[in-house]
Structure formats: structure tokens, C-alpha cells
Image (cartoon, rainbow, N blue to C red; front, side, top):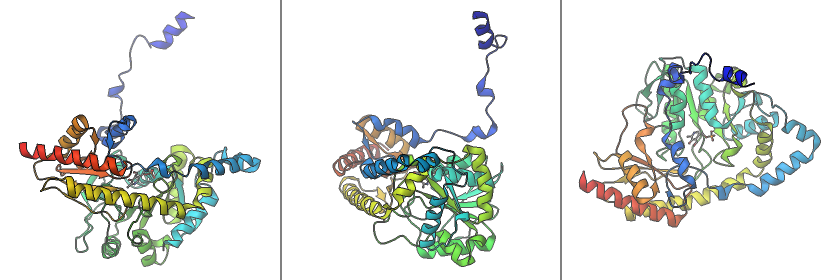
Length: 411
Ligand SMILES: Cc1ncc(COP(=O)(O)O)c(C=O)c1O
């Protein structure tokens, strides 16, 4: 017996050097600052102004418990819920999402929807479908860090995707990735004119676009402008002829742990993405999808509550910034979503500020540099008002302001 175990432990005594075995695609893959910061969430002494996590107080816990009981209490539904789902997604949920997209101005059918494990998986799948090593992907600078990390793994180069109406789009990119609503990380949005222009310019040079619609529903001041996807579908007169894919999510409107998002686009592209889904994880959890479908019936009321809470917190954080930031610091004023972007005086390093704010002031914020794939603007920080109470946010911003002022004096 012992002899058998020894033989299994070491093949001739040679240990495997894993570090020499990783594929070249892992060369650019690094830990996300934000995922690292999530480890600090359990520490109650730290004021969380970093990650843009939905407030658990908003989770539809009672509704989810009742929906689970209904689904699992019915033998036929329970059998479906605990089986493998179709790779395309649970058909009734696909139909709900198709109706939702249609109501938002982008007429879609079931075949135009693939359900993914959160929209993050959708971003990865589109990258896997379109990007070969050495390809260029055009992104807004700064951009959502999760998308950059997904694209990095395909060994790509980056170009800037300017969204000003007059700015030309870069030639030669495989696709352009953009988040038009209350962006992560800046909190800013594209105007209707900018959306229309980007759709027209992209169509003129044959540049496909991937639209990240994660925050589309979280508007505070009147509904968001039509999505880039909706404008492209309308311009092409059909989703089948449109050059834009749209990544959607229930994470910020229901709960992130349900890991339910979607990609909407021409059915031929969706069929290709289904092949990727099959290879990646066969299917998204049927139980989660059925739960989301049940919860979707109350989505509007739920989102209304989320908008009210986040709007109050946005206002409180803007007030705290007015009171607590030294002259020379500027910030964005988001009309929805979860983020405010700070620009520090030139020469002040956001990463150093974030580090000292965490270690010495117990305030967690995110350095802005991580959101640039190239040529980071280091004098930037991302703040989120999603999680901290108004009192905590005011205290956190006050401490951060003092820290920035002290570091400015030394710079
Ligand atoms: C802009 C943006 N897109 C996509 C995601 C991914 O969200 P999920 O995979 O939970 O849908 C996030 C998460 O924070 C995000 O901020």
C-alpha cells in the first residue's frame, strides 16, 4: 500500500514546474485590483467606497425564497430546475429578455438571445468569438476592468475608442467595446448625439460594436437614452442586419449571485456563441434562470427602489465631496449607476493615495490607473456610493480628502 502511494506521489521523484507550463495567454492576465479589494469586505472597520457591489439590503430575499419554494414544490418544474438547461438558455427567460429588449426599442426574438453566466461571461464569449492573438480591440479609455481582463486573455492590442461626435473611430480594430450608460468606472454617459454618431461611424467603416448595458436601468434623472444596440437595430431595420451586440445583466437590478446575463444580437452570431457556451460550461443554471424569470415579474418595482437608494447615496457622496475635497480635485456627477470618478492634481498617484487611505485611514477606494489598458492616467480614483451608508460615505470622503490634501502638500 505504502509503496503504491509513493509511486503516485512522485513520478521518478520529478516535481512538475507549473510556472513554466502556463500558456502564453496567461502572460497578460493579472489579478484585478477590485477582486483583491473584495477580500477586505469582511473587515467592518474599513469604509467601503471601492467596489461597485449592489447593496444586499436591496436583494429580493423574500420574493426569491417564495419563488424557489414554488419552483421546487412543483415536481415538473423541479425536474427542469435541477437538470441541465439548454445551452442557449431557459426558453421562457429568453422570451422575456427578447420582449424586454423589444420594449427598449430593439425588436428581438428568442433566437437573438443567449443567456450567459452574468454579462461578464458574455463579454468573454464575444472576445473568444472575434479575437485572435495580435488583433486590436478598440475600447473607451478608461474602461470596465473586467472586460479588459477578459480581452487580455486573447493576446490582443488596444486602441482608443473615442466617442465624441466628431472623433474618427480607429481603423483596423476587430470590434469596439463601449458602455454608454453611467459607465464603470467614470459614471459618465453618452448623449443621444454621441450614440447616434458612434453607430453611424462604426457602420461606415464596418466596425462591430459590443455594448455593455450593465447599468442601463439604473438611471436617476429620467430614463437613459436609447441603447446603441437599439439605434443600430433601428438603423439596419432588423436585428439580423445590425453590427452591434448587447451584453445585458440582472446583477445590478436583481442580485449578482444569480449569475444571469445575456448577449443579444443577430441569430447567426448567437448560434456561434452557443457553441462557445457549450464548450465553456454547457449551460447556465436552470434553477437560477427560472428564479430570475419569476423575479422579473417584479423587476420594475424592484429597480424603482434601487434607483431611489442609489440616487440618495449619490447625492450624499457629491455633498461630501464638495465639503471634503481640497481645491484641485475634480469629479464626475453621474446621472445613474454606482460610480464617481475623481481626478487628482497632476503628479499625485491614485494608487499611492488608495494604498495610504486603506492602510492609514481605513477607507477603500480604487486606483483609476487599473482601468486603462495602456497609458494609464495615474492621478485618478474610482469611488462607489453603492454600499456604504450615507454617514459612512461622508466620513470616508472626509478622511480621503484629508489624505489627498496631506499628499498634495508633499508632492
Ligand atoms: C460595466 C460592467 N459590465 C459587466 C459587469 C459584469 O457583471 P455581471 O457578470 O455580474 O453581469 C460589471 C460588473 O461590475 C460591470 O460593471
